[in-house]
Length: 112
Image 1 (cartoon, rainbow, N blue to C red):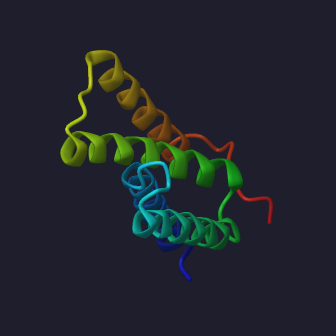
Image 2 (spheres, rainbow, N blue to C red):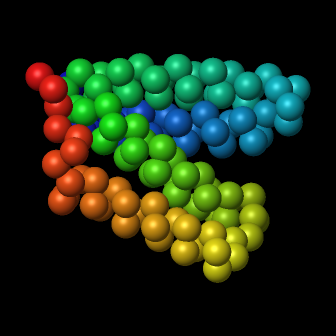
C-alpha cells in the first residue's frame, strides 16, 4: 500500500476512534465503544503500514498533529465545543511545524 495513503487512513481511523470515544459515554454505549476499538485498531494497523516506508518522526508528527486539528474541528462542528484565540494560534503553530517538517527539514529521512 502507498505509505501516504496508509497515513491518511490511519489519521481517519484515529478520528473515528476518538469521536466514538466521546460518544461512548464512559463506555456505557456499546456501539460507540465498538467504534473506539475498531477505530484505534485500524489506526495503528495503517500507521504500521506507513512506517514501513516513512520515517517514524515524520509519520508520528503528522499523525498526531492532524489528529489534534481534526479532533478540534469535529468538536466544533458536531459537539458545539468552542475555541479561543490561544487555541487557534496553537493549532496554527502545529500546522506550521508540520509544514516545516515535511517540506524544509531533512531531519526525518528514512534510515533504509
